[in-house]
Image 1 (cartoon, rainbow over the protein chains, first blue to last red):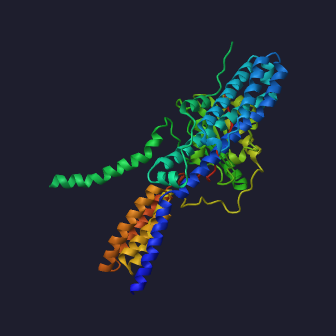
Image 2 (cartoon, each protein chain N blue to C red):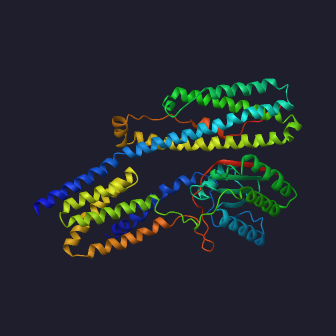
Image 3 (spheres, rainbow over the protein chains, first blue to last red):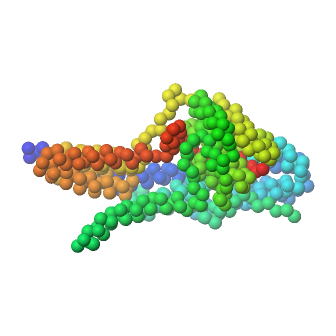
Length: 201
Length: 297
């Protein structure tokens, strides 16, 4: 009888320990870290999708508006700059690289906004079927970028909370050496959520 | 004395209210709420006649029966200042149109006051219902009819074009997919609690302390997140200790109480959305990534 109760005390303690282990957030932290990486990959994926659209778009606009050299070159340059910065989930931890990436993509957004704006001056271009398709693809991609960024923001917020909250912060700091991840700023998010501004001059 | 009793009676509901408000408050941030999904044709702007709506519903239903694609039409009197794209995405993801895994849902939204229309394509339909194709449907099928004042005709033509575009992308599963329950947090916590308490009570026969510890550990282990886990663990600890002593006092009595509690709790988890009495239509768990196109007329 005595031995039985000692044994079951041992079993009880083991089960309690298993419960506490999961309570310290080890698995949650790993899972959330993986989630943020997946969400970031989707952001990159959508930015890449936008970059892939640009050569066709530039070629189509050139066909109708060849003397808009400045704007066209601006787009090509901005694209080269944006695709030149590779941010993998691993280098994500570096806030400076993250900042640079954001800036380059924002630059491309602005350049594309200008390109779409000049299309307004060319009725033939606006009526061109392939330009229309490209334009709707571009709009759809901008929308996807917004969605992907929003999801990344939510995932990182969740992850950062886990990293900072007690007691999971102890697991994150001393066991996993995890740190907070940089996130898109709200001002920046607003700028991207807005469609490119159209200016007539 | 009497007054004191009164305030004690009211303290619980008040606390419950604060608790519920904490959960509901994020929804209040939005100016325009996502309407509850009650059918395939959600004509909130009242632009369709009853027969139009019935015909559309029948088409959409038949389409889902053969392909599994879930397409829903929503007309709104106004967006109330909400930007179009984020709102449509919010509606589509809240309703979870399309099947889980294949994400083959689509939403056609018409906002009367803003004169805006949008087709939102689920992840799984982006290959067929591309942005360009969506824009073409809006430009060629919907907008010309809307401009001539034929809203029902435009919606019907748009839906027909969408269905034709996405036909053949998916096959409906053999059995209509039943949304897998128990994935929600309340269900998981309840399971953690029940398993922990039952196990703990069983071990309590050997040793009260061992039973309580083991039950608590099990509940902690099974609970989804840290905070619920701690709460669930504590509740299990209390329940095992209290029920255990009640059981050793008068066998069975404590268990009956607990059974009635758990059966009452089971009701919370199942009360999800999309419960529409007649049709019983609800989203299948599909996800949206922002694909589709917008237009105005």
